[in-house]
Image (cartoon, rainbow, N blue to C red):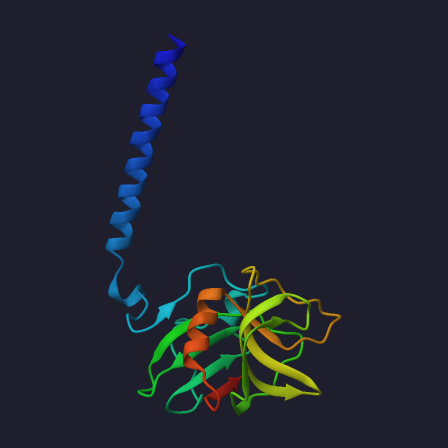
Length: 187
């Protein structure tokens, strides 16, 4: 009898999981247009970076920040901990959350000055797709992805300049931000 009970429980569990999956699919397929992200920008999956709060987020995280310039550029919003890759038409082609370094550049316009395929970061972590754009008090500031995929907050006692992103976002940044590409930092 125990065998038939466990088989029945397994069968009921499978039916329940299928029903939940179907209902989740139905719900996602019926999201109103005004609640869906724009189809032109790809937002990376994953949780928000550490320290984000509802007060720091705008209602549409995919919308390019106002007063961030014109034309092709990378936009880095310090307060939102988010980056946008903006094509020549002024539209976001990719946006993603980042974990800021302990040293941040002041708001303003910069350009990509150098790139490295893979190196060891100032925090000792192996990183890839390093795109540098500023120097603050002798600390190089740039975007990078940890080879191990981590996005942990840096040690606040160390002066680091690496703005960390997920590896897939690092791939997009690497392909987009060649030397000379404009980088606009907004508050």
